Length: 497
Ligand SMILES: Cc1cc2nc3c(=O)[nH]c(=O)nc-3n(C[C@H](O)[C@H](O)[C@H](O)COP(=O)(O)OP(=O)(O)OC[C@H]3O[C@@H](n4cnc5c(N)ncnc54)[C@H](O)[C@@H]3O)c2cc1C
Image 1 (cartoon, rainbow, N blue to C red):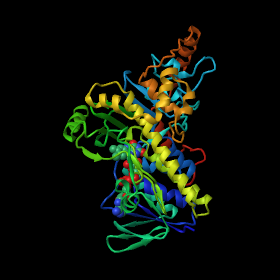
Image 2: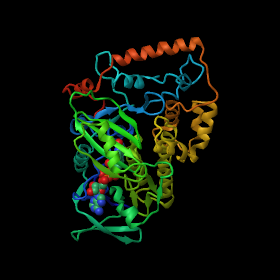
Image 3: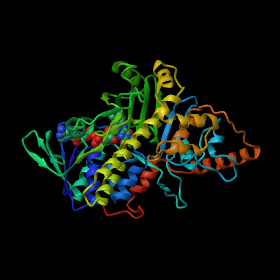
Image 4: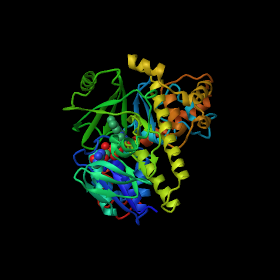
């Protein structure tokens, strides 16, 4: 039976895993070892809605505390400057995969020409507002939001929470591991200390110390679907720019650029393929489009996953086990999901996980990564905005073979949610809605065009003007933050800390 857990790494992944395990299985002794010399990656600042759900609903962390300490802003979607349209919005709600009673078809069929907004979150995004207003003027904070949160602030807050819940944090650099009959029995630190445990979480970031280096688990590269492998990162102190309630993803010559909206800082980064553009050229293009950036740094990465994320008594969580480039900001989503599944598997096995549980866990994690890969691949395959060599290569050569049936179905039938039966897994936050937004947003052609009746267009116009009115009356991020920071603001069901 597992009694002692050692987490290698105190980035956001290691800390979330440690807090989850300790909070849900308090009888376990949970320690984290981290190297202050190596530090944390310092990027990874956009989340999906499962992150706040994990923090507040699952772990019971106080919203009041988290908002004060981590200072997140809300992210209600991604604004894509992508494809033939000027822009389109991807929200965390069900927009296209929904059906209004008065209309014959799902909403996607009405968005060919004008894919502005067809639900409240998208209408809010279109008006740069984050939440609708309640009758008392306060923000109506709905669960379809993620966060923008600065990586270093998040890591500091997670460290405080980890200590609070009883996790011990040890500073030291791991230099090797001792193998035992169950897998790993101890790790050695450079200063000679030996840390024993009967279960290990490898959250050592891209170094992948245990799963990669010690176990030499094969790495499955996604390089036939995702060509980008570097990012040039920079940002500037916010002056009078409005704080936008979404991430912007903008097409660039050899990749794309993010804009992440912190309260006092605008974070930008250009994700590119080193085979298509040099670091210097990428930096020059990035600076040309972002003249306010004072300095930049390059981060290298590879998209893919280890064949197994759980081997013997080691499970990899975070960048150590898998990573896809950040176009949909999915890493923390996977970290939270993996942490919850690990906790469940430990609990359901009475702290003695069986080989079949390990096998199932590996299959579930692999499916999640592969689905995200497929979803991102469609972003590249469908984007016709630029005619550079990189984008021509993406349109022609991005491997989408595992979702070919879905694409064929769409090309014949258009945006019906029945296509959900053709995606390999529905384990992510995206599901068929995500694929439909990409296909409709990029105006991928389909044969079975639908021509709405005049009566339907009347309903469409009326609904959209109602949505616009509701959005216009909503709150922007500044006003909503002022509400939740007011001493009298009450979070429904908030815990003490
Ligand atoms: C360009 C880019 C953009 C990204 N954007 C997003 C995003 O918007 N949203 C998102 O969710 N994710 C994003 N990510 C992923 C992001 O990095 C992760 O979400 C997140 O920060 C988790 O990192 P981590 O904890 O796995 O690794 P790290 O932060 O690198 O932490 C690794 C830890 O392991 C320790 N360590 C390593 N080796 C040793 C050793 N030998 N001994 C002791 N300690 C060791 C380090 O000291 C550190 O504490 C992005 C990644 C990149 C590259």
